[in-house]
Image (cartoon, one colour):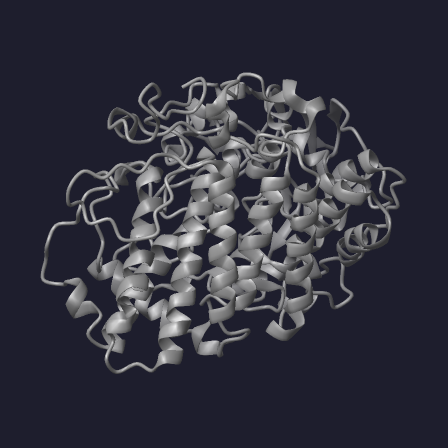
Length: 619
């Protein structure tokens, strides 16, 4: 296994010491209190400065990895997961799942999870990261024992980190205050929200500059550090979002954002003032730039010609499942390595986020939160022949019935179900209610009682290497994303065919699925959106995809259903009869397309104008 030192060890030091950290419950405009560790001392030597850099990584390179052991997966606010409401609201309070899915999200309990509910709103943590990146940029030249090439590299990393957290803010709130220098809290500071265009342009500019400063590759000891390709990847992602209907709204979709716009000049903080197809062209070129630079960075699509998993060893994993099980595999552009940080008494940094409630009940094989998969999401997977399917209302033998569907191999590498053989440690999974059998299945119960809910995701739940979690690193960017970004953007700009179809089918071929050749832009759009849904299931992409496509108001205003199994003694054999049951009725108000700012920040009146407090529409 690849040597893991540097950034991981330094992250541990930051967890223990909280270097250059500020109180999360204070406004990001406040000056941090003094202490024994000062900016001058931390940037005195290269060795000391590394800790400031590591703190920057901890705050900024997070992807969608929850930072608390009892936090739920962020997909719980989408159609990918159902965390039983209200029984498990305690486990999903980091993103306020219970209030979110029932249409009751509020400004002071929104879905921007930060570092957990006990650590203040997520909004502040983004600006803590931005402040840390700006401190590094401002002070790194003070390091006396470092050469200019090292300083330039660190500046590139800091520029990326600043860009990353402005992007994170953008994807939740729209236009936000742009902060490109450390705020010291002296005097009255007034930084209003910037337009969507200004935020996107700033992130792109910082990524372009960072790409000129960062190396194409790094030694294994620096695994997890930012590279040139990561900077290009962030640029491509934000340009794809910016070209999408939420921000670049075509005339025929104006009604889809009714209730999420002001209808006046304030809308510049929510979207561009006009629809411009050239934004799709820019997104396509940026995604292609990632693809074209991948080879020089040692990055390639993980494809050994094994579309299906046939066992529980690394050698028998399908290529799709290998992408998140094989540490430092070539498809990963940037990862969050916090799982490898040695912890201090549990919680963040000891891998417990993988092993506890984040992952699935089957990880613990005892009491715990079950990450139930709604049928509506399961049916996004095609059959292996590329056709759609609908689950019947009932059945007599769940494992036989699920196998008989002969679904996309990625389904069987992502979703666990009652009666599935999982591993030598877990054996055959038992989610069933006992019925006329002697006992309930060991995975059947919940805080709401024995539920028999029969399917949950096992993505990022180890079943190889004796179920150790050490091989996991959360993918912030992987190359497959930019194949599909390119396909999506070029179709929107010039229609299907050519490269659009080729890159779509490269992902399908790796998965063992037949090619698609949609004849028109609408058919291709449907195809590529579904491909993203499946390829990046449970990797934190679904929330933003549904929002930017303006599909969330349709997909998330519905009743989600699950499969419930009951054990039957049939001729002395256990059979799992099953039925479709309702999970929850979801509500998605149009105002959800933009997350509300915390009321504390609104009360300070700096976000907006003289006659407007800066809050998003409807809040």
